Structure formats: C-alpha cells, structure tokens
Image 1 (tube, rainbow, N blue to C red):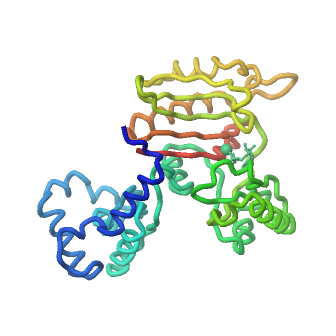
Image 2 (cartoon, rainbow, N blue to C red; image 1 turned 90 degrees about the vertical axis):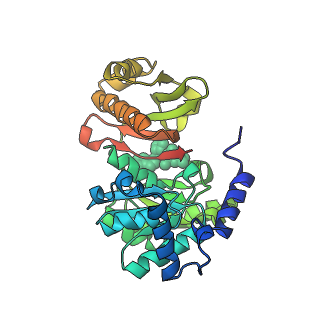
Image 3 (cartoon, protein in one colour; image 1 turned 180 degrees about the vertical axis):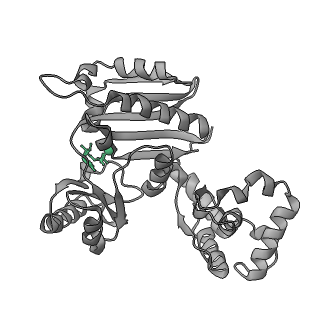
Length: 333
Ligand code: ADP
Ligand code: MG
C-alpha cells in the first residue's frame, strides 16, 4: 500500500507534474502559448467527446465551483465560459501558473492556487462546508498588515489565528487569540502571536492570518469522519474543543446514518446531560447537532474521496442562529 502522507512521495509527484504539466505531453508547442492551450483543448474534447455532456459545463452558471487537481484548467475554463465562478487548486506551481495565464488570455476571472488536497486549505474546505449548510464564522485570510481592515469588515470581537499549510495545532504554538475587542488589542495580539510563533520556530510556515468572527459562548462539540480499512467511512460525534483527547467522550457510527442513528449518537455520549443543561443552564440546540450529523453523513455519501474530516470545535448554543462551526480540517484522497 502507498503511504499517502509520505512527504517524499508527494514531492516526487509534485516534481513530476512540475516538469510535465498536465497536457504538455500532447503537443510539441511552447507551454503557455495560445496555440498550445487550443491544442490541449482540441485534444481533450476531440479524443474524449463524452466529456462535454458528462461534465454538464452549462449547468453551473452563477454557481461556485472548486476543482481539486485542476491541471491546466481546461475543464475549469469551460465552466467559467458558461458563467460559473471557478476556483482551481493543484499540487504543482507550474500548472497553476498556466491556469492563470490561460484565464488572463480569455479575460475570465479565476482563483487558482497551489494546494494539497490531502490537507485542503481552510478557505476551500469552508466553501464545501458552507455548501452543505454548515454555519461558519465569517473569516478572512490576509497578510499581517491587513488584519485591521479585515477585522473592521468582520466586526469586533474577532479571533486571530496563524494560518499556514503545515500549521495544524494552532493553539499549541500560540497561534490562536480569542475575544479581541478592538484595534489596540488586535495590534497587541498580532505582536504577541508573531513573537510566540518565532519562539516556536514556525513563523516562516505562516502564510497569512485568519481573522474570524468570534462565536457566542456555548458547548464545544466535535463532528467528524474517518475511513476504517474494514468497515469504510465512520461518522463521529463527541464533546469537543481542547479537551477532546483527554475526555474521549465520543461515539462512532457506520454509514448509512439516519436521523434515528444521529439521535442515538447524541444521546449515546456520557456528557449528554451537559447538552441538556445542568444547574439552571439552558439546553443547547440539540436538534442542530442531530441535523449537523446528517449533513456530515450526506457529505460522506456524496464525496467518496473524503478521507478525513474534523469539525472541532462546533460551538452549540441554545439558539440555532448563534451556533457556529469554528475550526475544521478536511483531507481527500
Ligand atoms: P486549534 O484546534 O488549531 O488549536 P481552533 O481554531 O480550534 O485551533 O481554536 C482553539 C480554541 O479556541 C477552540 O477550541 C475554541 O475554544 C476557541 N476558538 C477558536 N476560534 C473561535 C471563534 N471564532 N469563536 C469562539 N471561540 C473560538
Ligand atoms: Mg480546533
């Protein structure tokens, strides 16, 4: 079996596609010339005429579309031509450069960037979750100088987080500051964070700062999925936040997960009474949790390439409109 998290292997794949961007083997033409792109396109839809009907390019007008592993962006361009708002990610910088060149030639907008689907960028995972109806905190990912204008747009209080492909446990390295009330506090938070990141020797891995809406306080839960070698996808629910690994109050279910299963999962954790509220606390919106488990199950059945998903924490409050998915990680295979 291939170990898919093997960085060396990933680098080999990256190097290969960088040296031979998708499509370049078909033509003797200069990469990135108009002729070259036209030839790649002619080849693709000439040799695979079924592609046009299979992809339903015209059905995406006005819709957002994310292509993972977009290569030269040939299909992405067809979607954009029929009016879709397109984002393409690819492992190889050479491909992304060509995508940008191609779209510029056509005068069409595209968001194209290097990304690793095995560790999907926050912004892309956010779009997928939003499409499934999960309520996310408003956020922007910006360079340090722009955190202030981002915070103004989002509205205080905000949360500041270090953002980077290889930065995973943000709070462990001082990469999360919550409850920032004003500009002066934000300035301080940014300064302190940069100092902590420097001390942890990870400042060079930071490629931006996530400014995020501060969620109302509530109970932190975790929702997720993982792949079991024998049983296939497992859906997971439990008490979440920073203590998830210590408390280990989580339950798993095999697919399919019905509404009855989702209720059983929620009632099946030891901390269930905490959700009902203790000592005069209000009950949190437990129906929201049950619904979220079902949304997750829908994602699992729609996206067979989904290898791992962790929504941690999801903050659940007594009122539905204040519930938020705060942090997440998504891995495709
Ligand atoms: P990580 O898991 O990488 O350490 P998180 O983004 O999960 O970082 O943040 C850690 C903790 O900070 C969360 O469990 C939550 O308690 C708190 N937190 C983070 N973002 C927010 C937010 N937008 N609103 C409220 N609390 C937050
Ligand atoms: Mg987290």
